[in-house]
View: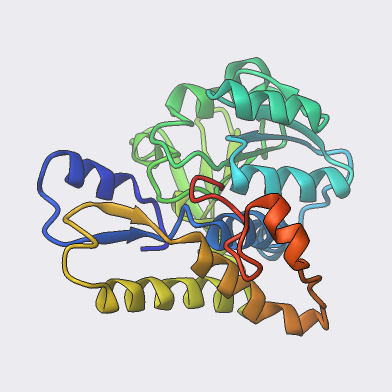
Length: 275
């Protein structure tokens, strides 16, 4: 499964997983290419298609600095936006600081930002209290795993008016006339409002296909009813299949170098825990 693997681990922990499962989302070729590089492009594409917003000088808060958040922040920073980041993980938080982003709590900036983007994979990241305090015209969207990050249900109350502006774009209007721009009703912006490049789809689909082949061909007993990461050898194979697109030429280790590093000349070059 290419989406959030959390539910798989929950099923496994509860002893309710009926078959072996491969966590493709946390494989390197999914994390680095689909989650990071694809989202780096699709965040701008999705926002432009739906709102025609100009990014230069806009204040944006990105909730979550995992691979998706990193991609979104890099794209917005390059377009001249002022980017804030929220994080719960001190390691990701420190990465955001070292990348030049201001680490804040959402309630510290919610009144001033022009765009709010969620990329956490969590639930209720943006709640009614936050939505009530947003400025007029604030754009709210989700780049995370599912539609649980923005509490859209809390906006379906009698005192608020919903106005469909165009496909995937709603204005939610408060009694005082303030309105926010909600994209795709809180669903994934990159899947609802933009395109996913075929090159990235090729990488992800190849990873998924190899995971299925590995599970099918594995000798009995190798995989139990649990969740597994794709072996690094296969991750590297997926990457190598896509290098010819760039006319890229890999350097090969000499026997002496391979022995020095304690590696096989043909890989895997990264340990299984590498992400």
